[in-house]
Length: 113
Image (cartoon, rainbow, N blue to C red):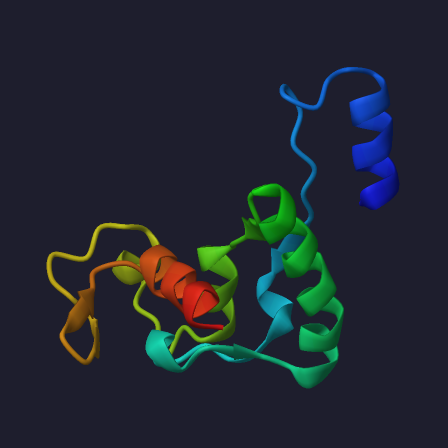
């Protein structure tokens, strides 16, 4: 990532292009409830220097989220409406927060992790 940033800077594109790296849900050791989300220790050791780099340059961390994968693997526990943003009410409660769709629950689990 540093090499890419150097190349972007050398091309005088530093103000136009930000360098980042995507992470995905496979990194979670736990994601439920969202406030208790954390990454596996192996992934965390890889992620710490990446996050340090992103914070240093104020670049975004990209997250690859696939709510439908959570549904496919857990149809007994995850309702289709919850995965499709069509649930009429909160299906998951975490403290004072209620989640009407799995997308925001996953996003908050990433934030907690």
